[in-house]
Length: 178
Length: 210
Image 1 (cartoon, rainbow over the protein chains, first blue to last red):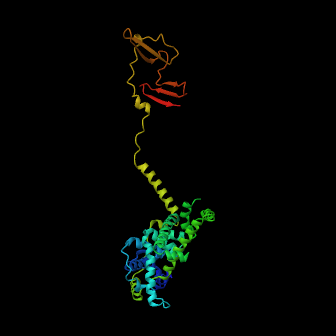
Image 2: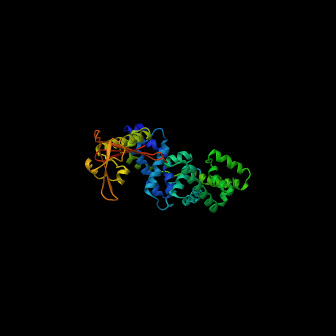
Image 3: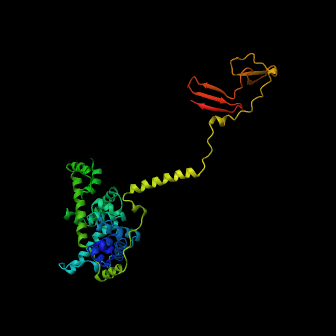
């Protein structure tokens, strides 16, 4: 599909990136904690992916390549103020859920994810890639263009901080999960 | 292993991110330490909570915005592969090798183009200036060499200039051909250093050390 796009069939780009549209937007939101910025990051990521598709190494994972671009875009744009106001409009509707429960659930989720606000930008990147997206330490290092040792150091700090915040804000969660 | 170190490693061990050897050492500690074991459970619970929440809270583009974005992208052309000098090389080491060769070639060219500086004088040349012109050889009738060995290839002339002053000069022996060079070798008995001096007729000298 990459070859098709590079060959001039630009309409092939949409099916190429559609599987990752949620991933990119969600990751951008978790990084920036600001929905407008998340859209901006996600949009810029897709634009850069299209422009630089020729430099994509086909031996690599396309998903990891997109994530790498997104991390670079996020760093280049810089952090903005967290904004939770418009999040509800963009959450994926779940037909099985009661609308009222869904709203309460989203708010609870937001609060729990706000534990990530206590992390430094690098710790947040590492934590999101490794613990939320499930990338391996090696893949995380590759995406962030750093060493596995650096990833482990930041990951360790991030987990320590997250544990403290969850324990402090949601002690019940620790008991039920444990 | 003590608990202080174990607690640092536990953070990675909880999700199997600790290297194998350290994991084994940590496990040996965990078998004996209930407190550290409890910490692992806490970390796993916190991470599981965050992961569950994250899985439920994915976002998606509103369809209209997504279509606008895709339309905008399709109106562009995918750019060519960015040109980088390093990209011409499949391995970085080749690029470094070529850079090294270029540096060596440049160094050789510079050495050829730029004139080399004058040779550095010997230390002895710096410390001992070239001796002054030798004394004029005395006329045979005003000097005598009776007191000096006769087997020398030159003759030493002597002139008394006062009660405490004697002037010496060397000149060709009367019965031998004049020679242009004279050499002298000094040997240090302590170090074995040999200093070989060769004098020309102007008393300029060269020094060789062995």
